[in-house]
Each structure stands twice: as structure tokens, then as C-alpha cells.
Image 1 (tube, protein in one colour):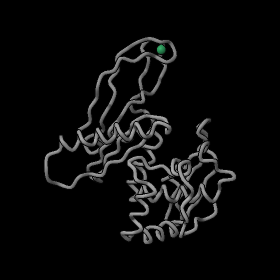
Image 2 (cartoon, protein in one colour):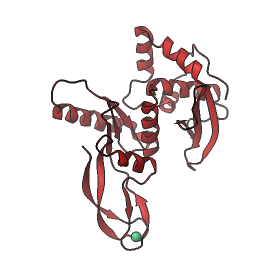
Image 3 (tube, rainbow, N blue to C red):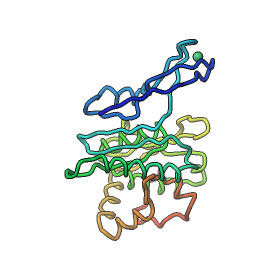
Image 4 (cartoon, rainbow, N blue to C red):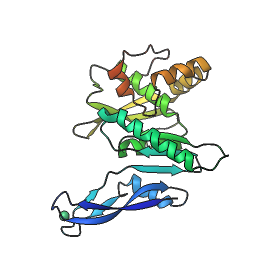
Length: 237
Ligand SMILES: [Zn+2]
């Protein structure tokens, strides 16, 4: 079920205070239109009653796709606060599990820290891709291109629209300017080879060791540790 709550909000342009209804949970089976609103960056958009300025409210949001059995928790936070976001996420998961009747398979829960990551995660899961493995791929791309791809300044985003049977497409985004820069192709064959390689208990454990979650980030791993040895070399962009 989708749900909204009322917030008192001040316009960032003129300061006018008004109350606005903000979605805190979206169920795309009940309300498929909300997925489109989110994709078009119209979800939780407020229009100032005084000056007409449009702005988006970044509030925690639970995105639920019951047909595909996944839930994504958006906890807006800078990546430097990922640890705190993970704690808030775990508490939310506990609340959800308590609220859930017994029986039936548990949906998979994901954590993202901003709207762009939420949209990316929706596309990844809808495409049947493994987000953990995708972070592994990003890690490999960063590692191979460290001279021109600084993980402190750039992030890689999966681009579903341009990906096809041959290639998975990633876009480099500059974090400061938010501008989309280079496009990087990663052969789908190489992804499938990785998937086969990790389809083994010991290898799966290694993948979970690299990306324990709930917040999955190649950039965070790059900052925290030395790069892992890649058994399957990434494609050159
Ligand atoms: Zn205003």
C-alpha cells in the first residue's frame, strides 16, 4: 500500500511555509503511476503556493514492487553517512518484519542513499541484474581506469535504456556538477562469466565479503580497501 504523510515545508526560494503531502511509501502494483512519477522526477514535488517555485522533497521512501518481490528503502544521506543510514535501515527492516504476517517468501530489501540510486536500482532489478555483481563490475571499471576515473569525484550509473543484449551501459556522473559525462560499455558476456564464476558458495561468500551491504558501493570499497584481484578482466571502455 502506498502512503503519504503531511510535512510542514518552507519554500527554498521565498521561505513561505506550507503543509504538503509527501509519499513515504510507494507500492507500484497498487499505484503504477507513482513509478512513472518517480522516474520523471515528479514524485514528492511541491509547488510553492506563494511564488510558484517547484522543488522536490527528499524524504525517506519505501519503494515496493510486490510482483518482482523487492523493496528499496531510500534513506537520503551523503555517502559519508552511509554507516548511519545502514543502522536506520536495519531498524526499519526489523519494524517491517515484525509487521509482516508469517509465511510467504520474504521480499529482498535494498538500501539506497539518493533518488538517482533509487532509479538505478529499480532499473537493475527490473532487468534481472544482481546489484552486488554490478557493484563488482563498477569496482573493476574504476580499478582499471583510476587515472581518469576518480571514485571520490565520479560515480558510475547503470543505464538501462541504452543497455542491450551485447552490452551493459554505464554513465559516468560527476558528483559535484551532477553532469553526465562518458559512457562506458561492459560486455554482457563478461557479466555472465562473472555470474557463473560467483555461482559457487565459496565465491558467493567472497562477493558478500567485498560488499556485505546493506549499502552496496564500489566507491566505498575503493576508499576502504585495496582492490580485489579480478579473475575476469573488465572490458576497456
Ligand atoms: Zn516560494
